[in-house]
Length: 339
Image (cartoon, rainbow, N blue to C red; front, top):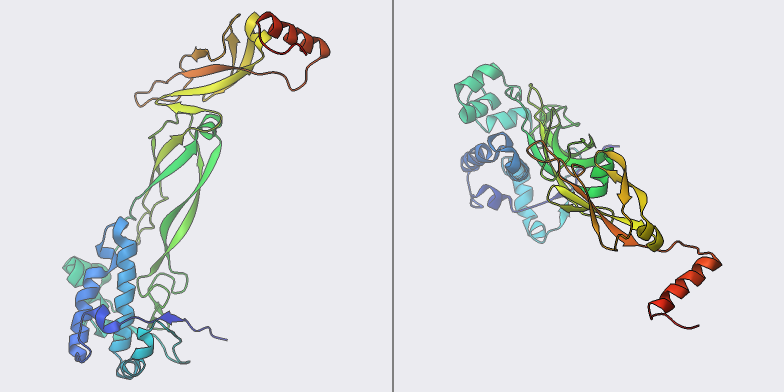
């Protein structure tokens, strides 16, 4: 059973900027002007979603108002539409045909004339003056995005997944804008739709805050040419394990008071791998031990430092002798309880 597309109707006269008693020629003229203004291919990548939404809006309005029968029904039931009610087009009603769409722009060249108006005579040669909905060849636009990484994920590296908005060929019409010689209802003749693209990124060893990566071919798809690139800026954020301080990192190392007193070694994880850190004898709590060149990569090709901050902790379980020694230490220092 065919599924009917439910449409939230708008004020079509307002969408085209014409009066309710506008003639067919006035409606066509208004649509031509707005279509050339709002076609997504005339706008930079960052403005295309808004332009595409506006293009679909005026295309929907023209499809109704350019058809005498549909316009009559719209005028008759307009009061209900003004109250925001949903309307389901009656079974059997089709979208604007290719011929109707091309006729909206006039001239023997039809739709290719429209693109010739937008991009000049070179556009006509590239489309061959065809009446088919063709698009000129051009490289896809680059996509700019930011990825926030917890500092610990940057240190341990591995992979990170992200999703970015992208254009994809319309699955319903195959990217040509028409279905059975009617304007595709899914993409409104644009030929592409907005989707979410999932990307798996391998975090580089030279990771740093503000690092810009160019991922080839992961931008917008091209029109008969190569896809654009994804320009990805990494943003590092402090977390429970590591604190980001410029190009330096800061992390806590936990040692027992007696180990800090006699000196010990602890394992630390840096952006360059695992290493051993010597805690000198009689190290006080809060001491910052510096590991040179074990921090984040710098813009100049060097590396920052990693600072390990000593934190005193007690083991989760203590022997009776350890408990007694701690009580004795507390009494010696004048603190604690005599219990």
